[in-house]
Structure formats: structure tokens, C-alpha cells
Image 1: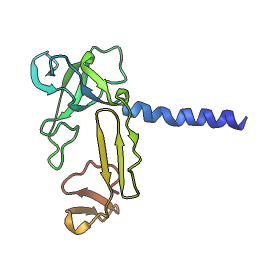
Image 2 (image 1 turned 60 degrees about the vertical axis):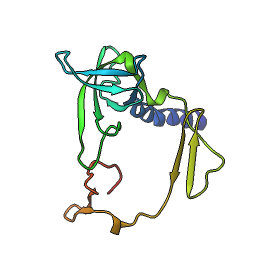
Image 3 (image 1 turned 45 degrees about the vertical axis):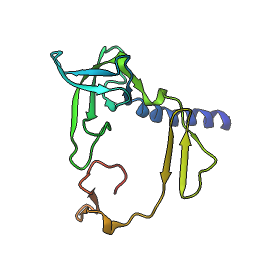
Image 4 (image 1 turned 180 degrees about the vertical axis):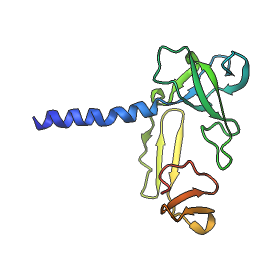
Length: 160
């Protein structure tokens, strides 16, 4: 009985993680780009292949056009410190979700101070170092008792 409860708990724990991952996608289009349109269908922008964006309609499989938010300058969803993001609609056939991409595996050269993940086409190296608050502009909310922003970016997760 304990095993059954454990497996059910594990599945329920993983469902929100999987759902959250599906909100992020990349452009996959044979033309090398896809047009972003407003609600009237007018082209308002262009996203190149592999551009990362947030798909607010990822859970709505019945919709042909998905509302997306993307960063213009860097190809990431949120750009800091100025937060320049754009929104528009793209056809769902041009979306490949990050959760569906080939998974990265931890590599043997990883250490306590450096993690390396890779697959056949991509390698990501994460280096850990101590955070030096003197090298950053930190804004505290003294009344609430938490950090409001770091280097002008206030939409970070886990800064409190």
C-alpha cells in the first residue's frame, strides 16, 4: 500500500512541473522564421528559428493561433533590466515546446563548482561562484523584508 501511495504522489508531483515546462517553446519553421501577428492578422514581427518565447495558450490545444510573449533583443522571454517584451500570435504548427526537445544529460566532467549538461547538438556549462553584493545594484523592500530587484530586474524568481 505504501508503494502505491508513493507512486501516485510522485506522479502528482511531476504533473505541475511538466505543465510548467510546456509554456516555453522555440520556433521551428522550414522557412527559418515565422511571422508574429496581431489579433487582426497583420504581421507585427518576425521570430527566427530557435527563438525562445512564452506560449500563454500552450494548454489550449483547440486553438490554431497561440498568444506568445518574447524578448526582441536577445531571443529570451524576458529581457532585463528594461523588460522589453513583445506579444502577438503565431500558428501552433510553428511551435516546438522545450519539454519536447532532446534531453540534456549530466556529463562526467561535472564537479561541485561546475555542472556540464549536453546532448548531441548542445552543451551547457554552469559555473558556480559566490554572489558579491558589492558588484550589483540591489534594491531592498525594508517594510516587507525582501529584495525588490537586482541590477534593475524585478521579475526574478527566488531573489527574496
